[in-house]
Length: 195
Image 1 (tube, rainbow, N blue to C red):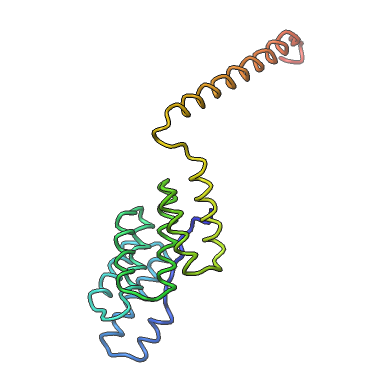
Image 2: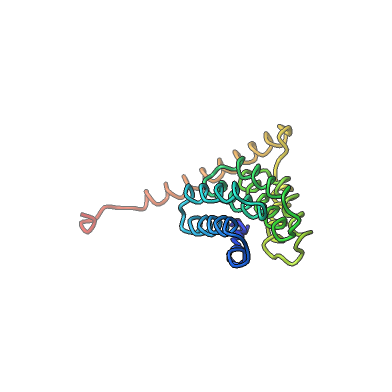
């Protein structure tokens, strides 16, 4: 599975905003750029603060700020916060690339949690938004494979049967190993070279 997040850090949009906008928007763009730099350096707490400062001052581009903020939460292991913040990004955008990346990243999160049905649906959405993305195709197939091989929770008969056949196999292997070791021990003699 290609289980890394699709990270979008829109440096060019922030830089363009700095050049073409007011002083307040330039400050906001600087916060976004600083947050992106902090994130790439692994300074997650600092990145959160910078994104939140940008969000407070921002009248546009909240989708990118929320998206990046959610990625920081994911990197910190805060999956629930990441999901909530990706939802906020979705509510503030019609940008297909941002929507694609949100769907992909949700799929990664759900897959890592073992929620393969939800991962499958997220990767399927990502592919609808960007049909040429290879990672989404791989992850979709992997999620589907996991769904098909996962034993249903309420199927205790299948689990019992699997345990019985595993037990028989382990007993067989143990007998074979015991036979192999007993033959080697009987054939072994100590010599002076051993000491």
